[in-house]
Amino acid sequence: MQSIKDKVIVITGASSGIGASAARKLTQLGAKVVLAARREDQLKTLVTEIGENAMYVVTDVAKRTDLDNLIQQAIAKFGHVDVMWNNAGIMPISFFEEGHVDEWDKMIDINIKGVLYGINAVLPHMLQRGEGHILSTSSVGGLKTSPGIGVYSGTKFAVKAIMETLREEVAQTIKVTTIYPGATKSELGHDITSPKIKGLYGNLTNMPKLDEEAIANAVIYAISQPDNITVNEVVVRPLGQT
Ligand code: NDP
Image 1 (tube, rainbow, N blue to C red):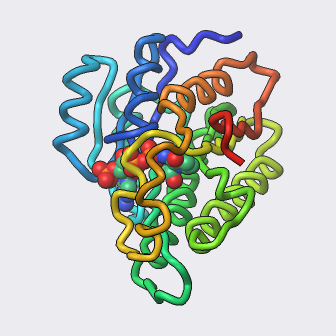
Image 2: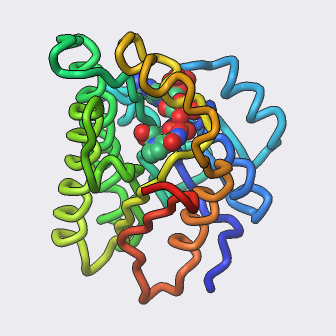
């Protein structure tokens, strides 16, 4: 396995949940992390907790210029970017008949365009260096659909297609990994407004869920492989999730 020490890792969606947990774990292994999200107070607290090996850049991944700025800031502070992890995502799910079109738009902007803008911002830098690793977070919902998650699932299927095509295009130089988490403890879904979904899922507190650390471990597995090995997809479910 390759050491993670001193790797410069940019993480979007780092203000809570999976991204924040991974930031802690990666810095414990010696990585330098650049944390991106919209909530500055959360990011600031996390950087204070981690110390000098962390910095944050307030970033809205739905804005292309924010991603360009994120990569520029990361390079200005740490000199280069080894790993870019497009992890930010939202899940305000609903049934099609409810017509929550504004939420569909937001999921498309954040979950799909956010990944594309992240790739666009970092790719020239990595191609110029002749190395690098791009990860994105899809979901088990990016592998199978179920009623009520159509648009979210569509965005996560899109992440799969985008990442697989990216892999085919840059396979000679850059590692490409898609992470597919199953149900994981986090803030995801706090923005669900659909009464129908709330009615269905609201009392599923006994549903098996992964600790966020399980996804951090998957990322660590992917990024600590030797130079000549690339892990392209990792699916992690809690036992019991179908
Ligand atoms: P959280 O809600 O805890 O984290 C989501 C993160 O995304 C937050 O840091 C949030 O920060 C950030 N974010 C949301 N919108 C934007 C935006 N426009 N610009 C920048 N950052 C944004 O949930 P998770 O940790 O679970 O989610 C992380 C990823 O994992 C998501 O892509 C999600 O779809 C995926 N996933 C999660 C699963 C689960 O069960 N938890 C299962 C499968 C996939 P802020 O609000 O500060 O901007």
